[in-house]
Length: 432
Ligand code: ATP
Ligand code: MG
Image (cartoon, rainbow, N blue to C red; front, side, top):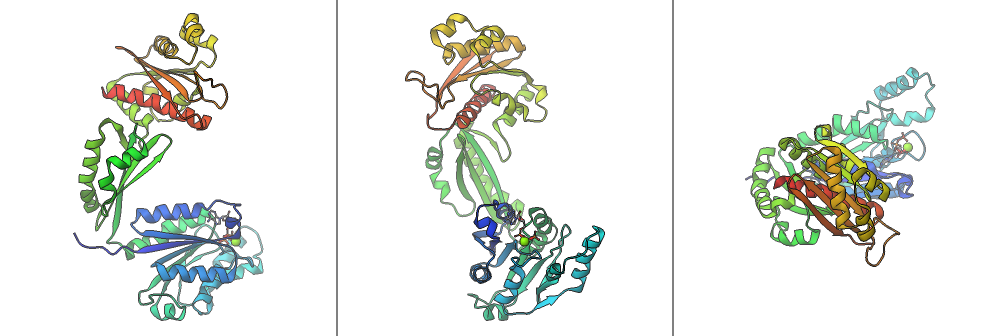
């Protein structure tokens, strides 16, 4: 396999409002995931306010480290929009005035029936030697600048012998994304084209992050492909990423690792990439032509919501009810008064009757039931917050699961994890 040079890129977000926490830096999030998708490393992201000396020093630092610098924000017409002039000043080149750009900006205002403010003239300026990065959605175009070694030297950039690329984008996310997709991304792909990144996420349910990391410790040290664990909301994922000259080559490189993870994970592995538990059980139910119903108490309809988030779920979802109150559990599901009196609503006995009653009520093949204490109040020593019972009624009998979730996690989280556990019970049943 040939060695492919891996280009590196940095992001510089300009705007005092970002530093004050007034807006969230979604531009960085977008651009970093896009860069990962085309196999360009991003090792640093910097945010700086609308301040000339600081912007210039950030630009120089970033270019001393990286091959490519993407800058967002500060291209507007006002006095605090400094990006273009900072860029020119960093390399001591003059700003040139682009007549064609000026005409486009004037036309932009004309067609909207406004007189162009004088301040917008500055948006037609860009550093000498740079090219236009067109902005089809707004007035401020960006710049693509391939900076030659002579200028890098003049600007005091470390390792000036290889060219650097700088691109500027307006801060407005919609404009930035269009410019990225239409011009910037194709430009970078062409330039660094013999290097692609391919990755897959292998999703697991029923194992904690540290157990997962321990189980696959030997894989986490690999360099190509790399394997990285992620955890959240009671689930774990392993991301396998391979780098090669083509997608096919990268996939080939990753395959033995994927196979190993699949074999070792068994039924813990529920899907890949965009799969969710609800999507996966939807697929299994459709395949087996089985229907499902759910009677929920503490999850308040979350299982139902998640099931029906999946397009096409009407093929297998029968009827779901939220029986929050004991009286509703009795009347709709036929839970016996004695069961409730003896064991309470949060009990194994109750969820068995709920699931069986639901299965009859919905005339479904399978029925789930959930009852528990989502907190923050309402817990007792015998039945603490986080205690959840789940029932699953099937043609061959009813099974139950008892969950004791940590009581410090939020009500929202307890409900989410209980719903996941219920969905996973259905999945495991369907897998046999
Ligand atoms: P404008 O012509 O609107 O002045 P600009 O290129 O000067 O554009 P900014 O003034 O920095 O960009 O930002 C314009 C708007 O874009 C901000 O008010 C904000 O809503 C949004 N924005 C700026 N930077 C970001 C960012 N990093 N992430 C998300 N949104 C951003
Ligand atoms: Mg601005």
